[in-house]
Amino acid sequence: MPMSTEELDLMRDPFEELGHLRKLAKADPTKRFDMLYRLVCHPEVLAVAAERVRQNTGGRTAGIDGQTRKQINAELLTHLAEDLTQHRYGPQAVRRVYIPKGKTGRRALGIPAIRDRIVQAAVAQVLETIYEPIFRNCSYGFRPNRNPMQALRQVAQAYRAGVTWVIEGDLVKCFDSIPHGVILNCLRKRIKDERFIDLIRLMLKAGVMEEGSLMPTYSGTPQGGLASPILSNIVLHEFDCWLEDHWKANPSALTRKQQYARTTTEYARHKRNLVRWRAQLAGRIPMGRQTPEGLQAKIKQTLVARAHIPSVHPRRMISFCRYADDYLVVLCQYSKAEAQHLKEAMAQWLGEHLGLTQHPDKTHITHWTKRFRFLGYDLRGQRNRNGTRWLRLSIPPEKERELKAKVKWLCSLTHIPELDLFTSVNALLRGWTHYFRYANNAPKRFGYLTGVVYWLTAHYLGRKHRRSIKRVMRMRYGIDPKSKRRALYTINDTGKRVFIWNKPPPWQSLLNPTVQAKDVQPLPMTSWSKGHSYEQREEALHRAAYRCEQCGATSVPLVVHHPNRLAKASKRKQGQANVMASGQEQRVKVLCQECHKRHHPGGWNGTSKKSETVLS
Image 1 (tube, rainbow, N blue to C red):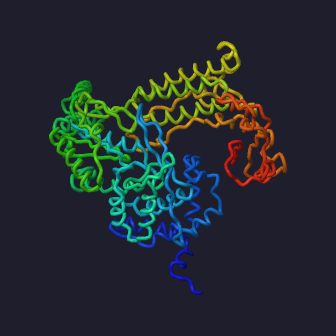
Image 2: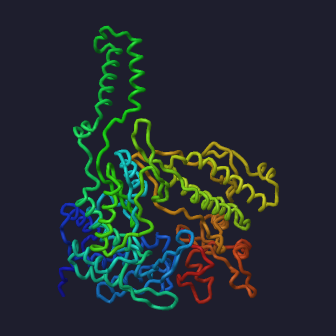
Image 3: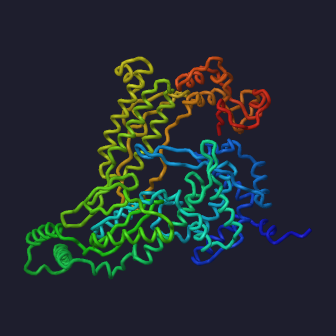
């Protein structure tokens, strides 16, 4: 039987085809693409999407199917590819959960089934190929190779142009309130494959399962889905285009001639005099009646006078940047009335064209000298002595209090193994300080945090070993070879010292073009709370020499087997301390997965059990 054209196309390398689509999208921003559904069905694309789901920390949470990333295997991907190809695939409802938002609010998250997550990751990969080349540079959220520091850098550059007013913008439940019709219409501007559009429509209308009740969804794309960020960016891309095309926001950089024309007359006169006088001192031009002492005095006086004169005239412009549904409009040389007019125009356009609403309590018009919050930083305008305006970043006090509370809570739990605590605190402090290293008050606050972490850790060691701080200092205080500073340490199973965080990263200017902060929330290790101690795992691996203790196999995935779990006890004790003690008291074994099957009645089918930890 002869193969169809589509089957022949599927035999090609799908990633080579995705690269070709990216080139076409970049060359023609108005081109509409067809035959995208077959890329989602391709087994290799689904395999890459499955790996993306495995690497996502959310893959440990199950949807309504009860499956996590541990259940992803070749058989599941084969059946999924067949269902997609034969048009038998139908997404399941997402499981609704809530996480804290702020001090009193809650944020709703939708957790899809594991099969749906893989399909969403494949759809997101195709959409990123088509839309990334045409997204505007003012969009920074949920995009590859972009981070919050780049958005703040754009704001800082706009302040130097002569800021007068700032519009802080936020949208009311952006992810939950985007009409499905708006999403599909935006997609149809670039995509003419109706099978691909219909697949996304099924994902959007899959429904929500909350407390056992199935509720239909008529709008929004649930937060938690892997395709939700790219879909929201596609919709809000229309907003970016409207501001840049209609309001001429983010104008192109000035040419050298235009930049020279902005130079103030008095500053240019001082600059010319300094060049001439320095050339006379160097002997490149005749000195005339001038004396070296007189020229040096003139240069000194002119430098003092020039320091109080702005070098360029302010530039009238609008700078706009957006990070997901939070956006900032910096108005340079605009009045407050003009800022109010722009704010109302944005609210009207968002409602008419995208069906979105500006948040009435979070959208403000702020004077450039007032403090406001954006992307976790406190921003406030400052003025130099020559009148030039610049942006000052500072660490919010509540962010610092939250960090200290987390470290204090960890150090108050003396049942945590030392290596687990040191690893958790180090990860927490490294991630937090690397994100806030661009704040102007970072060196001072980081120095204070170094002392806080030291004393909290010292009290933890004192309580754990029932010894005074003085004895702890004698036993666990030494010089860290990496930072060359004295700090507390613990010793792992190989005898190596693991030091507590003691050297914060140096301050870095936000205007440095190589900003490298990632929008990743630092997560301390909490596996100890379920009886899976990192310290115990390292000891077991070292004792077994990274071999299966049953058959001696190497270079295979290994599992830590707990023979007698707390869940099997007749009188189960509650609390993290009892669970941790149950795991620590056992003689665990390092096994390969084949040997692990024989340690469980009924065999081991790869399903998730709370008593095992897979080591890769």
